Image (tube, rainbow, N blue to C red; front, top):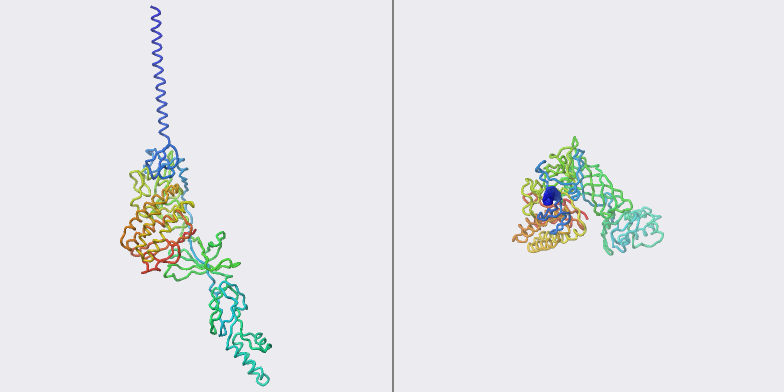
Amino acid sequence: MKNRKTTYIAISTLVLGLLLGWMIFGSADKSSNSAEAHDHSEETIWTCSMHPQIRANEPGACPLCGMDLIPLSTDSNDDGNPLEIRMSPTAMQLANVQTSIVSKQKPVKEVRMNGKVKTDERNVYSQSSHIPGRIEKLTVNFTGETIQKGQVLAYIYSPELVAAQEELFEALKIKESQPSLFSAAKEKLKNWKLTENQINKILANGEIQEQFPILADVSGVVTDKRINLGDYIQKGQSLYEIADINTVWVLFDVYESDIPWIKQGDKVEFTVRALSNEKFKGEISFIDPVINSNTRVASARVILKNHGQRLKPDMFVQGIIESQLEVNEEVIVVPKSAVMWTGERSVVYVKNASSDKVSFLMKMVTLGPSLGDGYLIKEGLEVGEEIATNGTFSIDAAAQLAGKPSMMNPEGGVPVSGHNHGGASHSETMTKEEMSIGQKEKDALSPLFEAYFKLKNNLVNDDFKAGISSAKEMTTILNKIDMKIFKGDAHNFWMKRSDQLENQLKNAAATKDIQKLRIFFEQISDEMILILKTFGAMDKAIYIEHCPMVNNNNGADWLSLESEIKNPYYGEAMLKCGEVKEVIGK
């Protein structure tokens, strides 16, 4: 009986122990699993800004397009502004987001100009002949040859000069009785620009000289040869153009919009394309008071000493003038990389670090003049605010994904669920943030630009059929470009622009009228200019040219490989209408 009681107590104790153990450790396991699940939920989720359906637990490349994944915020943002886009420090680092404090400064406008080296017009001389006759020998027979004053340029046979010498010898015979006649005969030879020494040499030899030398009146470089061996020339006829290039002019093209910023006496720093490792300095000595009616530019002149004659006429130059704006007080200026450009009213992202995590809020700003690397801000920002100056495109992409206000969707709304290329206008999608690309990407884009230039040339020649073929060729080349070679912001930008460009090319290829083709060409040109300006210089210099008469005098741009204006919007009807706005150099 006692043993049975002891057995019951032992069994009861064991059951109670198991129950207590399950309650304690089972609860702990649940707490642990719950905490682990909570910690797991705190992990960063990575997604693609162009393919939001992609989700990953660690950073990497999008399996669809190869673009770098960006962090997807799981923060509800309940304790902050619902319009802000939050970013973790890791996300900011990966997106290379940089910020700066807004401050005021004296605005300096940077005016960029293109130009050429030219001969100094004051040092150009026409070498003429004082003797009529036939060219028997040329000692200077090509342009570019350097000559010295008094050097023999050519020999000439002159029947008139032979007759004048015969008169001299006849007068010499009666010199004693008719000294005045002898003097008159000598003066006649001097009128042919023969020197006293030459006349005395003729008298000493006692023979008529049939060939006479033409001597250089000045030193310099032959810039134009106007005679050939055997030519018959008249007295006073120009034989050579000779220029002294020890001093040269540098003539810069100044666009109408930049004329108010340039004045006589401004300092210019410029480079010469052929001497790319050197910088030259000069001062504006003269500004042309008349604008060229064809190119719509005025010339600004810099006079430069040409040591060693290293600067050659017609060399291309690129110059910069820093012009102080005439304002009474300091103003807000921000870097161009901070601005998402949509016209005069553009977008910046303001940083807010008051919460636990950094956040950015889109702000509309009104732009003033472009100041080279920056913009003057008329309104929209206050001194002391901190704005994103790099990585703004990544912030905007994150805002689109989260359905927050962005450049593409200023009102915010439904988060982006895939490619959003359709219907965006040129002004809605333009960004002034330059994105550097490598040679591989440039090589991929080069055939696209070459096909574009074919389309432009066909419109210049009013060739509708060839223009349609060029539009189709551009479409084929565009579709062959591998989107994966573009990385980061450049990838995001290229995918948007390539879809827009493809739609416009399809419209152009389907049109039945050359005038409508020119309308689509304007849209195609806008896209190509945007791509060129964003990605920077290609393998050759490309000119951005402008016709002010297109679109009811609203104007339109196009790209060209040459500075000479050949208008694709009018063809032969107004072939020379337009001006060079800018050159994107290699």
